[in-house]
Image 1: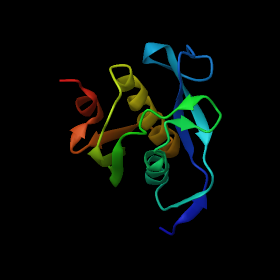
Image 2: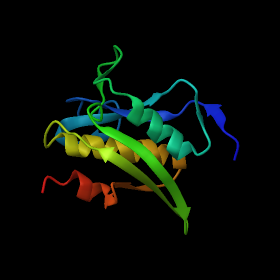
Image 3: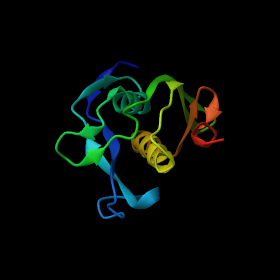
Length: 137
């Protein structure tokens, strides 16, 4: 496939918003869709996740939105589209600021990937499922 340039939809967190601005996320926050500037990609899921993970700013401009992935150093290793399932394989270091960041990180990754795929996307981090990677155990 040839690369194409298009904007992608990324999800960030509105703290203590209680679901007013988007889907409710644990600890009373909301996940809010933000459209990126145009990025180059061949796979929309890879493009959206890469754009999300390359942002190491804690706050998104003056929007009041927060990026709970800002301290993480994750990269998209591959996107697997076999058997009707889309799986995004990420590698690197996942860093979270506390228990409330677990649902925030999960929703930022899952909603961003699903929006790009138009279907649910399974996500692995260093070979573990997203829920295993987010576990505090």
